[in-house]
Image 1 (cartoon, one colour):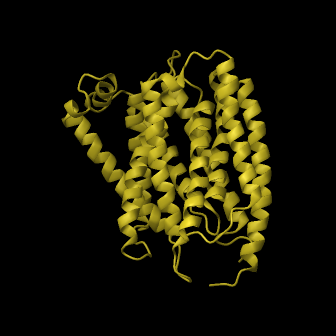
Image 2: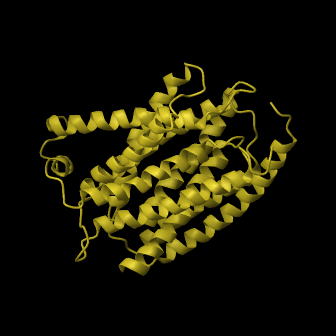
Length: 352
């Protein structure tokens, strides 16, 4: 195993940097396009969802088709569970954007979603170890990192509520539905990702690009089908509902900023590459990969909040944001120790 090859620490860092950069761009553009300040687009959350999802899906699907990643190097039966993973992705994509459209900061939205996925990742490892699918141990450093990551989430809940926040997340039906759908879809998706990764026959290629391609094509097909159903059969989703009306209106009478909003959505499409490749990083547990993925985006949340405040007049991070970030950095420290152990373990393992 080389220091720069597949499964190396340097490759992991490269993926994290790419993920960080494009997630910062995503966080900033969401708030910019939803801003009602003079001279800003002032799009409704659903309108931005339509345009940004179209842009993100376009760039992701285009890469998959042009580079022919869809020629997956895996047994045929793998398609039977990768396609459902793609359907779950079709749920994750819009619910992620919808979380950002709620009246909470980008940082809070990221903390809530990422904290949920961290718990899911640890649970998946526990389940697959019990099933005999995962044969690696979860290091104690990874478990400690999970604890600090969850403390970071709790910090936002405790300090944020103590500050008398105006938005009661747990008693808002839309917020609970969005988060519940996000968690359910991600639970199935992370299990499938790790099932694929942990069941590769010895010496067989772990074709992450192929997995991504099949998943993305299934996700795009699902999103296209649901879009058609909402547009042509709105009665199935509540024809007079505000969200349905904005959804159909965004397509029937597109806003003048639809193209630039779609371009902005392409950043989220690029994020999806880095996200999947980190989740499925070779030789790592779901706990470790999930933590790396989510903590990178949490740090990106602080960066995007600072960027929006510096250049677009947004609000600076609050006390709970900084306290949460401190716990996140502690978690990163434990992950670094775990990565050193895992890299040494992989280097000592026989090739094959």
